[in-house]
Image (cartoon, rainbow, N blue to C red):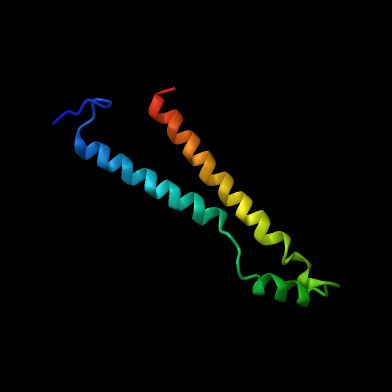
Length: 85
């Protein structure tokens, strides 16, 4: 059965929506917001860092920013792809 939006059948549209959901998950997973910095702090302590805790403020900010950027880029590319540009 053909539908009016894009000329694709329902099964193909359902598959495409599933792919977009996987892309969203991949973008979030790859950028990985770091909440628990224990491993990084332990490695810095082992390496003899003067202040191994100094990354506590910047790391969550940086990883949150990278995740938001990835989700925004995914949204923009999805919109561009729907227009057929």
